Length: 227
View (cartoon, rainbow, N blue to C red):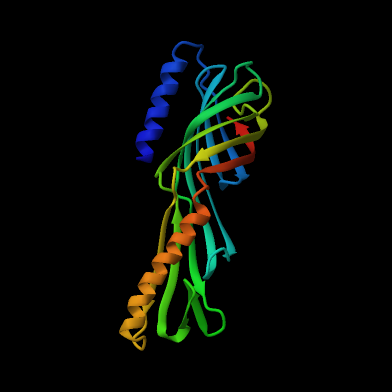
């Protein structure tokens, strides 16, 4: 799916670029921001239009404490991107539209409070539960991006260009949330049944907490070198 989106943007850029003058400059940039740290290839299509293909990644450890269960969590960013940048005044200012591979997710491992887990108001001995895990990820595998910024890595001027981009990625109306609790061998069967009901309630709590996280803010800084 990522390849289809990137191919579509390349074709669209070629069509738009066919009406303008040739501008086959290329530049390689390094970027860092809310989508992670990565590299980007910029290809000049015309004086005012270029195509940017990139990939960024980053892992960030945190703690989730918004529900009954506390999680040791990790935010995992894995974001391929394909963006068309339009420079309406042939300068640094640009408007951007494109797509980001929405591989961002949060993976959490439940941490007991002392020797107990409290799930949906019920207490369980931690030694009788195998694990409590949760995963939160975007519902869209490919997410649209819109934004604006400053810097044209394939424009007129020197070989080095500072880059700034501000925008947002639309990850979908509702994130996908999975919560799992496994029963240990010593957990009585009736408590195991109740545990599955309680972890379903825990999942709903997580859904309620992240239900509004449909737009992800983007702030990117970078430096590019033109070949």
